Figure 1 (cartoon, rainbow, N blue to C red):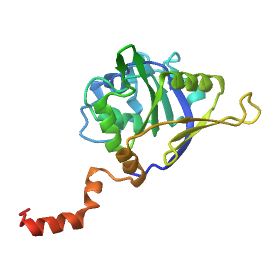
Figure 2 (spheres, helix red, strand yellow; figure 1 turned 90 degrees about the horizontal axis):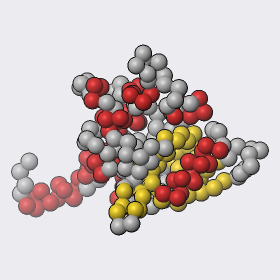
Figure 3 (cartoon, helix red, strand yellow; figure 1 turned 90 degrees about the vertical axis):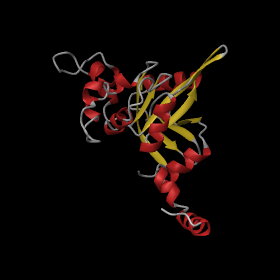
Figure 4 (tube, rainbow, N blue to C red; figure 1 turned 180 degrees about the vertical axis):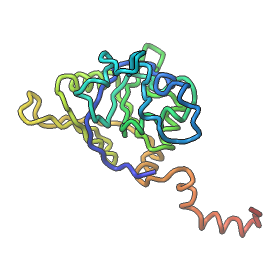
Length: 216
């Protein structure tokens, strides 16, 4: 996987909670043994009408979101099955980043992302950002108010930096800070999967094997 240090792109909004993996990539498209060709079927059932034409009511079919590489969605994104294809579909549709809120309801906490989807994203290089509910709502409102709004995701600084077009009412920048597990952060900065992370310690592993007479 490629390293992720900084990414700038247009933001799209899909203000729906509990988007499950069957909506992200329906099971009908999981028959292929290849790891490619899933992006065109991202949100298939929402994205297209029964006649195969684009659904004009679906948010991501709006021209203003064309070419977006940052997706802001509702909480519990990626719930449902464990299919890794869901992450592949999001990436192959052109999204590098997904932002979602963690929601607190009394004693209950609704996560921003389902655990298995989060783990699959780390393994495949899809960068996930968790915001508070109020921050995500503010971000969505800003995107809806400023067509073509872009953001820079600065991983070392752990910031989302919005970039408003010249002449807009909110000309300039606005930032949202985000938290990330230090191990996950290093994983993205180095662009190493789990095997790559392990091979960083190849010399130490070799010395251990010799010392303990490990047979491979």
